[in-house]
Amino acid sequence: MDRLAYLARRLMLVVPTFIGITIVCFTLTRFLPGGPVEMRMMRLKGMAAQGGAGEAGGGAGAAHVSEKYRKELEAQFGFDKPIYRQYWDWMVANRMGMKLPSYDYPNKTAWQLIKSRIPVSVWFGLASFLLTYLICIPLGIAKALKHRQPFDAASSVVVFVAYAIPSFALAMMLKMFFCGTVDGLWDVFPLGGIASDFDGPAGFWTTLRDRAWHMALPIACYVAGGFAMLTLLMKNSLLDQISADYVRTVIAKGGSRSRAIWLHAFRNALIPIATGFGSMISLLFAGSIVIETIFEIPGMGRLSWDALIGRDYAVFLALLALTASFQLVGNLISDVLYMVIDPRIDFSKK
Image (tube, rainbow, N blue to C red; front, side):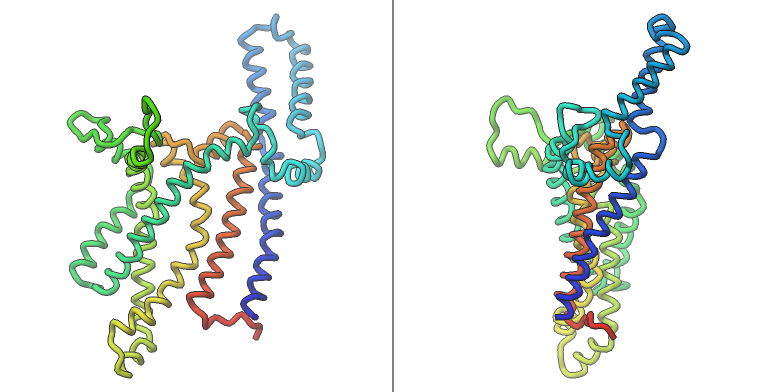
């Protein structure tokens, strides 16, 4: 019952937390300089400067046109309303901005742009997520069981090298060595994109092989980003549990070391891993700006970057709301996993 009450309290905190996040970010987009209105005003001034004083209207006329144009833009974007009314319209009437038209693509709403990028980010995010856990958890366990042995030392070198190389540097190196950008090196993988151009309809297995061919290098960069941290977290967590008193008690009572490790220590060692498990859900949809840009992947990360650079706040805020929602849901999933793995946790008030 205490656990259900705890989850209910956490669930009740989701809504005010989400509202707080969106209010802060929404307010910043309205008051920070260099917004969509200012950018379009700069374009107008640039065209006026190129067209000359005669076409621009000259002097006070140009200033009048600029001021009139500013008011029209503010009305177009809804910036002429009070800030609380803007937020209410964005949250309620426009469904977290999903129904708003993009500033840069007026014929498409924010949701239409996001919906077209979600499958790509899910493909890369899910594959990277599964590979990261399937590689790092067994590797961390093996390093803990062979602590201070040659395997531990050799694998530590690989782990720390992967940790030291930034993702953008690794992406550039992989493209240089395996994409034929340098003469004399391997031309194995495509330079970018997510699919090849087929002359006709391709079968399921052909499409799957082609997608895997395009995903290989970007996924390697995704996995390398969290490779070292998760591996060492698993290793250190298992080492701490193996050295705990309850493991020695199991062995002293006649239990084997394998039984003490796999039936007792291993489950408790998964607690730190499970704590961050749910938060990884947001990464399935958020994508990686750097990797998607280098490999020309039309995912969510690249969309958010383009929206931020172009001051397309309609798309950017919709992406922010979606990512924040998944992050909050992921935190709840982490709490549930935490309680499932360790039933000793007591949430009752002392």
